[in-house]
Length: 227
Image (cartoon, rainbow, N blue to C red; front, top):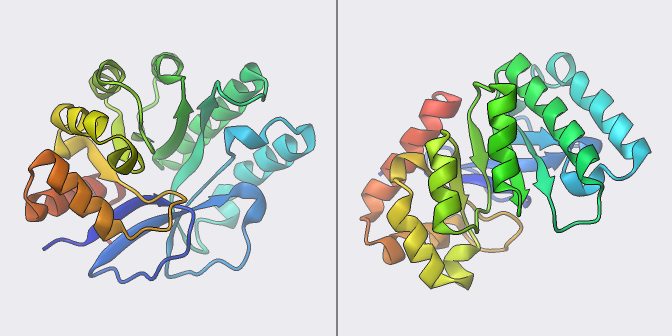
């Protein structure tokens, strides 16, 4: 059976690349005590760009990412970054910082892990405007079927987590729409095992566990390369 991929987590979990693969999220202002054996994503969260000082220092840190970080440890993606209409940070500032991170993603040829709340149409518009070629992954997707279909149409991958446990009816509908070739699973900030997430997804979708794990692992390899 293929390794179990956790595409997005904020927690430090045990890692065995033969059994588990995970990408741990790090905020750009908190790059400390990294473990060179782990995979990471690094970015500026939209909640944090309201402070001009944090915004400017974060952009400076990201601009230096290629020379300072890539050779030191396994930065697999830029993120999480994105847009959030439910927070009180100025939306135009969010867009500005998000686009800068997209530009960096294109420059260093790394995928983007995206935080999106009530902004799926905005995400699609920015993808069209920037003509970005790198893979985009919406983490923690909880939108409706129409949003899922539109994002998939524009080549964006969707990662499910909490929705599998908090809204089984919606999760079942989403799993009918999202092909496993475009699906990821995650734990995010939840203190649950990624294997529990896979078991829940398999149960709700009716997909055999072997196929689910194999397809998602193949997605990982396609986007990030062999481990």
